Length: 434
Image 1 (cartoon, rainbow, N blue to C red):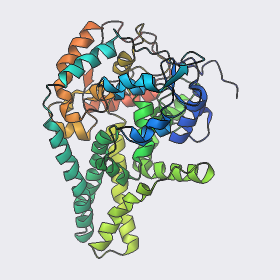
Image 2 (tube, one colour):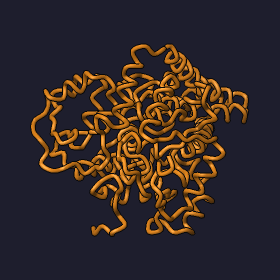
Image 3 (cartoon, helix red, strand yellow):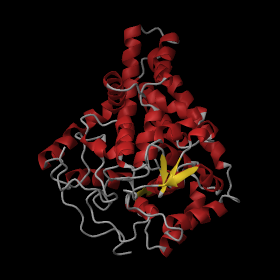
Image 4 (spheres, rainbow, N blue to C red):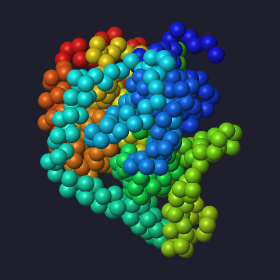
């Protein structure tokens, strides 16, 4: 396929090949990365090629991360997911050679740059940080998880629309809070994410390895997966103005069906290509099973009740998630002018406007993707301890001419729709006025 001149990436020397596929999936993204990344079939970090084959089963974070990322460049993912010095010291043991070709990614991670300076300060802060809020995060997660089943059963037994809505809300919030756990080493709490019909394995790719590393760029799978329903890239070649307006009109329907569509897409890919289904894809069935066992509903009515709960959760998840931090005309998107300093950490800051209305409430932060910038920069840290890092973040941003921007949810809702309609790239780089 011929790549048109407008198909260029602002963060890489190549246009990602996965975007030429008719069906955009996490598996397809990985295959595209293996094709594009010049990793020579192994793992690439900076300009070195590493063979972690013997380390896969020893990896403290679990086998998944290394197994799925083989054949790709994991430079930024490695740096963001390893705050401690230990993993960096291990690298030399597994290096097999220098890479034959330069990296395709143009973002930088210099030792004296913004991100590594900030990470060094955070590393020191973590030695004395109060980690007790992590227990509160765990309690919130467990309480919401239990609430799904309690309200789901009550909605059936009492024929209550209120309980039905509460069950859907609890499912939505449990899904979001579970995202706090699948960025880390394997743990039982991450499995609760699957109750939504989505799957944490797929999201570890689309969210942790793709969106978190390359937000709002062509390499951001979460940007591509929503097309053609929603197109946030300010480029008239991708989607016409008329189609952008139609996206806003059809938005509520898509929001309600997003969870089931994720499951359907993975099933179709498994039937047509490679299997991407897991045993834990059956976990969502625990909700209708609880309804059926603890109420007098028939099987048909049980499944209908479950569908309504899932659609409520799906709608709420999209209202929160798609308007959480990343889409506003003032935020960097693919095609916009980028700042002169290509530091990866500053790139994260430029692609985010935080939800200022969530600060001060651990519950709201956990259930609404709060403290977004710090979460992107240090995804393995519990949301509960992130507020203690703000003084360090502010200090480092001032030093490197970055800016933490904030607004409330309403402003994000309006901004996300203005971004859908925007077709002209911003010519003014982020930080130009900082």
